[in-house]
Image (tube, rainbow, N blue to C red):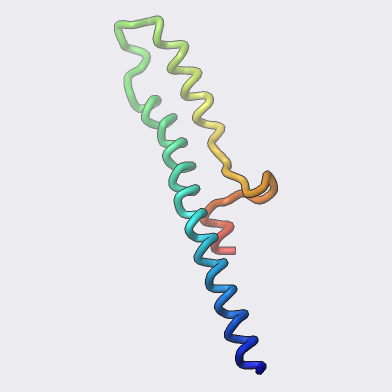
Amino acid sequence: RTYQTKIRHIFIFVTLAFQLGFYCIPANYVTDEALSVSYAIYSSKWYSHHFPSLNVPLLLMMQNAQHGITIRAGGLVAINTETFVN
């Protein structure tokens, strides 16, 4: 009977870890891509475009993208690969 309980607990643990990894890896990818937007705008020659009216929106996009995206589970725990490893 104790072997059945241990096997059940191991199965539940593996299932929950797999489910957490299923959410953490894409969440981390989305976060990294959001930060790369700011880098891509900064790397472009945004200051030398022939459309001076685009300078302010591009600066605002850069500023907002630097804040990053944090995906939270239930509004409490941040979901990322660090959460999965811990």
